[in-house]
Image (cartoon, rainbow, N blue to C red; front, side):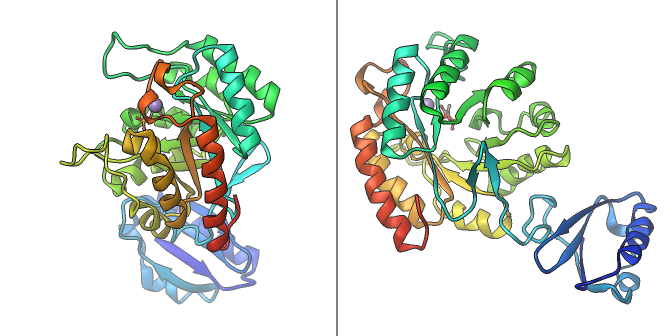
Length: 337
Ligand code: PEP
Ligand code: MN
């Protein structure tokens, strides 16, 4: 339930109303916008007498939220949320571009790619240090050594770093060393991990699960937010359908859907969505045209010899060309890159 207060409602009266509601065992979240104040009620609202609240003279409107996700719901927070990562904002007018290899492979590799994607205009560097591979015999990532290499690349280029976390036991280290902690598609419903990530304040990039509905995805974001971390970026990375031509099916329509349902920023990953490098530029352009707040692209200096996901990686030169066309599309819809 959401209570929209009248402008200039006196503080004392707001406190009385909050006290009355909290006495019924509910939690009240206050959202103060530029010209409104909203009280978001979380919990079992069946004991709330909606008519009694409506006649309170500081109340403008009361709405019941039908959806099971509350804190991530746009009714709770009508303005789009901005996630600030080391001074770079995601969710505002500027489209954020995250680029880098699927896996960190060596210090030289990550620094070279970081330097080149930065020169082309990327604002974040990605690189997996712990890889959730389908086969236990495939390259599993360099682990914490990989994280150290990412930190070196950050020191060289100034690009904030994005890397995937695999388990709760890694939270302290990732909270210290990584700027955006990625939760991969396979962990979208690892609720214990989500709760631990809710207790920190580092931005979380929450990828959509392989077969997750939009509602399930938003409920996973709700898990993180229910513990207090508001810094969540959603990432559409394709879902599993009957179509086998592409690795997954990129659900571009999820972007406007999520932007309508939630206030959180949405990023699109055309690399994992398609599985083919040649398809990444057109799908990245479609994502920006469709309203994505950012894109995440796998870039490798030697795709043919990459230790993971080479076939869907583009080269730094292709990435640079892509950035030029993304700038044109962003400009056409009143945004920048
Ligand atoms: C990745 O970003 O490297 C990755 C493993 O992605 P996903 O979780 O979307 O498969
Ligand atoms: Mn990958």
